[in-house]
Structure formats: C-alpha cells, structure tokens
Length: 162
Image (cartoon, rainbow, N blue to C red; front, side):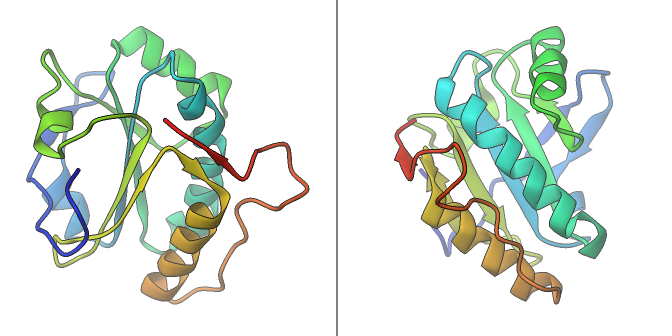
C-alpha cells in the first residue's frame, strides 16, 4: 500500500452515472479521502457509515470524500444508499487499475491526500482509533472543530481487519 509521504497516483475514474472524476482536480480544491471498497466486504459495510460522518463533518469545510468501488454501478449505488452515504462514488474498472496504483492488498483501504498531492494518512481495515485520528487531521487541515466519528459505546468494534 502506498504510504504517507508519497505522491498519490493521478487517477481518473467514472461515477456510476458515467461522469469522470479526476482525483488531482479534487485535490486541488482541498484534502481528499479516498476509500476503496468491495460491496460484499463486511468491514467495508461497517466502515462506510463512519466515512459518511466525516463527509458530514468536513464536507462544507472543503474536504472531499470519495468511495472507490471494486463493483459495478448498480451494486455500488445500492451499497451507498443502504449505508446512507451521500458522498460521491467512483468505479474502479476492469482489472482494478486504481486499486493496483495504490498497492491495495485488502479493502477497505483509506487514503488521505493533501492539497500537495501527497498521501498524509493510510488506514487498512477498520480501527476506531485510526478513524478518530483521521477526523482530527481533517479538522486541522480544514480549520474546523474536530468531530468524534466513533465512540466506545457505539455498535462498532474497536478494530476489525479488512
């Protein structure tokens, strides 16, 4: 997996509706959270509502959250709707070129890319501590108050591998 401090690959991927999104263009506007997933992955199913919380907390402050699906358009749209995700979903095409470019071994895999185009943080699987740390980094980058994404008393385990 690409590690912090390295330049993020310049990927362009379609939305389920066919519109192409350029990650470098998104990064030029502010920090971007890239969340790679597979619809059938239980850890992805757990993680995505928490990514929605990041989107809700920081989207108006210039942070972009993008889901990158290893599945087809219909499955991806259904997955997002079932988890209440309102952030944009992209499709990693045949052969998973974006997943390969980022060196994925498992999903979910989450990358925070700064305005400088560098990877600032990476998360593999689910970790309450890492998700809350990511929230803190996004708050500092966007100049807003930090949002607690996952609490010890919510339904999520502290850690779950991808």
